[in-house]
Image 1 (spheres, rainbow, N blue to C red):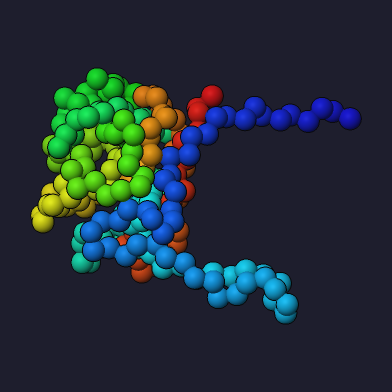
Image 2: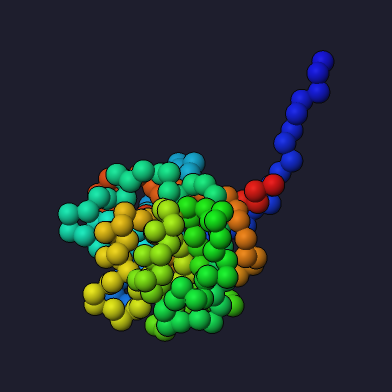
Length: 218
């Protein structure tokens, strides 16, 4: 009987923060809560819960509907941008805006179509950070010009927390980019990986939680 080929497992990095009742949310947004509608006991063989949360809790993908009244819902988006080669770039301690000079050291002719930027030494998974770092719109423009399909960041937004114009969100709307926010990149070295961060098929939602992971390319 011929020997079966078993491919070597490639290392995974889980880049999703934990989601629970204490998870930080944007001020005014809906936090995670959970109640039990059924519990195991006499006459009931299962536990069944109901959860309430903003789709922007934890690692998540925004849909155009989030920043465009006529935009597509998250369930209408192609999955292609959320799966495939990506590059993690460190811009730790930079801000308040991530400028091109902060990421240029990691840009070359082999840039994958997905770029994730790490800004925190340790991502604050237990508290809201109103001073979060965000993308400068000019940085997004240059990445889009290089063929980038998706940008990600380890903060809660690609725009400053107090922005009322959401310039970076409006720019990704204009350029057709997709976005991931609230990633945890603390343990991820700079370099290239396979990104897997598929949103749920919510047919009318403005965003979706994702279980974002990176996988070694070899």
